[in-house]
Amino acid sequence: MPRRFDVIVLGAGMVGVGVAVHLQRRGRAVVLVDRKPPGSETSMGNAGLIQREGAVPYAFPRDLATLLRYARNTAPELRYHLRDLPALAPFLWSYWRNSEPARHRAIARAYEPLIRHCLDEHRDLAAQAGALALLRPSGWMRVYRGEAALAAELLAIERTRQEFGVAYEALDAAALQRAEPALRPGLAGAVRYIDPVPCSDPQALVQAYAAHLRELGGELLQGDAATLREGWSVQAEGGPIQAPEVVVALGPWAQPLTRRLGLRLPLAVKRGYHMHYGVGGPALRQPVLDAERGYLLAPMRRGLRLTTGAELARLDAAPTPRQLDAVEPLARELLAPGGLGERLDPQPWMGQRPCTPDMMPLIGPAPRLRGLWLAHGHAHHGFTLGPVTGRLLAEMMCGQPTLVDPTPYLPSRFA
Image (cartoon, rainbow, N blue to C red; front, side):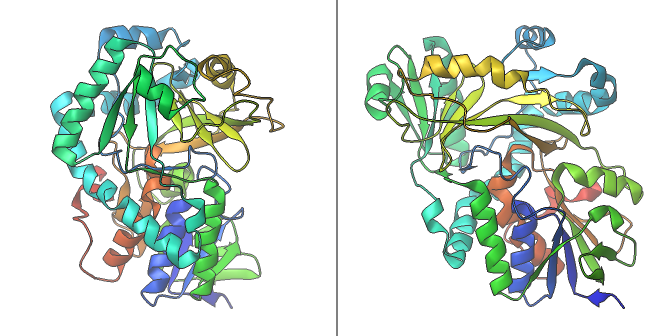
């Protein structure tokens, strides 16, 4: 006989753990299922930022100069697999259309309520899980090599401040050198976002939240989401499990499962790579994005993490970490001598960000499949939005008033 629960949550990344905790808090008997330990996939390898400033989703570039530069497939911030472009073309066309300025601004207004609550929800969960020590209230910064690029960013971020309350400070060259002596002199300046919170070990934070789930009475089991069958049952360690409701929080791996169940929801992946390095010079005080080169440096427990921009490819395509090789010399040049030491990892890590063409996640009931709920498609902000997504979906599933209006995120918008 299968073991029975109220809800099966598939996927133990930040989003899945957030959903499971919030359901368990509301009295549901929850089991969290994954093939790997919590936080072992995309949630582990990000820049570790809880991005309160991320009110405006990343748009597809629409100016001809940028598109031509990307077409050459040599830009450090974006690469693509040529053979995969035909399969990705419908997604990219829709993404491009949704990035039209007026439409993109409307999307940002619908998206921002989730971002607005991300810090409060993380802090609440981190406090309950005893994990506040992993969070460092230091903010982060985008640094600029050229005055023109810095001036353009200051105009854009001021509009975002006025509309969405994003707090920032502008740093000229001298102020930047005082704030971050680990950087080489000669940069034009920076925009420093004040409110975001870096995490020194993203996987450890997910695992702390998962341990809190156990403390609340929830269970974690190893199992394969591909065994999901309507009814809803899954094969897990110790035998089959069953529940009247199931949540798919599988990030990029949600699409193969939902397609097998008859859903046609648009999803693509932006892949990214990271490597950890030793530090031989002054240590960075906060994460730093080289805005004109498209990579980020983040101080972590493991060392200094270098993360790349986006790579467009199929979900099952082999890793091609050429972006990492391209930006490593740029990062060495950005830092003071010795600032980026030797590589610490045996090979580059690769993660896959699940992206929808309208830049908003899928949160809510699956069309036409009773008892199936979706929580994926968070693109660059899965780590940021895991707890607030968990709260929103749990409120929906339990018939409670919701923290924010869920309408913009409902999967039925693509049905």
